[in-house]
Length: 172
Image (cartoon, rainbow, N blue to C red; front, side, top):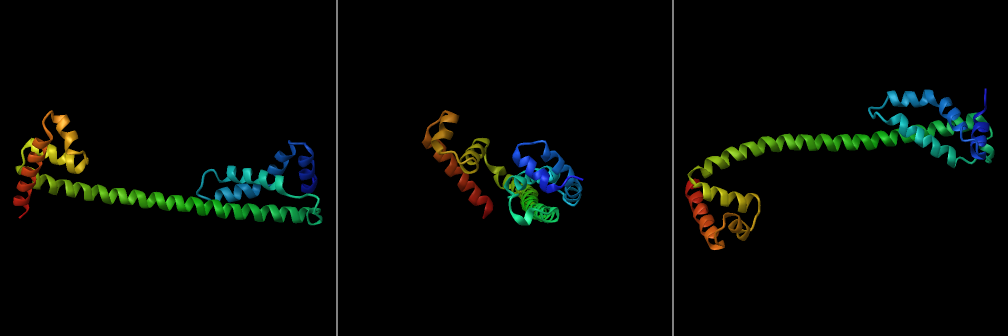
């Protein structure tokens, strides 16, 4: 059985194929962490993190001369990384869930408001409806609406004022 210490040392000396042996040695841990996670790329992220650990580990330190110390260090580091990745993904999932719920709630609210709005504007002419929609819902300036309809800005202002007066009467 090849010692982990010698695999890391050989990898750092330039034998890049030794990293595959290291990944193979930690494959059971990687598979276990992947199974326990809802994140489908967990194993891939942890393998990349293993590269980082191996690159940063100082094999010349006396505490890493025995495999049990190296294995313990790598396992703890990978478990901490696993926790960190899961927390990040949980935040993303929670934000997505809140956004989805907000969109569903707003869709119902928007539909309800649309029904009420259509009931209120039923007495307006099609031109008045168009002007109110463009000015208040699309936030277009009156001059731009005037260009679209090929009329003066003053005509749009009068149409808008007339529509608003009708709406006030309908609401009151």
